[in-house]
Length: 325
Image 1 (cartoon, rainbow, N blue to C red):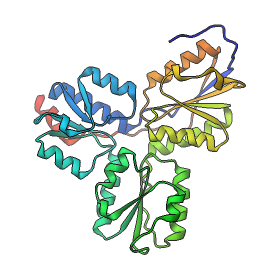
Image 2: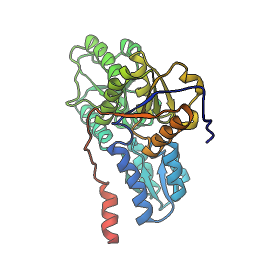
Image 3: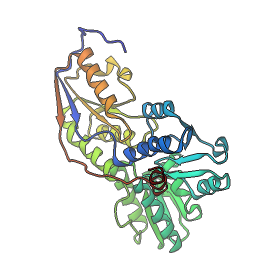
Image 4: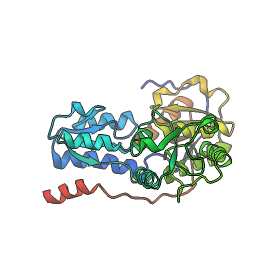
């Protein structure tokens, strides 16, 4: 990485959201791949990127993980890990038919939504799945009961969606959406379908909520917010949207090298956070870059809430690990 010192752009303060980066589901997913490589041997195949972060995926690839989109790429009898985003029953069945040894690294909070979809479909509900139709998590959830589900991705979709029985309808949500966007969509659905059945607990995951709330707390104190995350990371994109909704410019970056000088004109206080799939090492890379290039001397961590969540490893993997002891 090339930096220039001294530089004509001077930023006085860098404000970091203390609540940032890896959530418990991401930590678990990475642990699953690393431990599977230890006890199952190389290679271990992973359907889809285990999480949406190029740096992490490249690191796991270097250790022996092979990432695939099509199970036809996986030799029979191989070890296969389902990513944190979840998969449909059809993918699980295909893995069985191909005699693959599957380990499910689906985030438990995504699994919760899958189970809700199954239960609602059995009770005869039409399920409105609030999410992005092309997102891998939504595709996986939709596969649980496709004949009972309709995907709604915007307020406009909510206004137009038609249902076979307007009195027998429920909604679920993709876990990584914006709280504000979801709230607006649900408001439209409740107006159109007064008997709308809501999930017992909000489907948007605790980590997504917490990181969005942290952004809301930080943005009044900064002129611009940088969000570390991948362009295909839904939760990272939502963090940018939250900042922009509060009137603060925001840019999504994957590495420090993505930062453009032109963004920094007039910026005295710069904010920085990271999506749930972005590792801390990349946060510190950005901190150093800003210190070297923009002369930042004041780095402040903005505290909001603490997280203390941990998910156990999948049963299949724990069983293998015990057998190796």
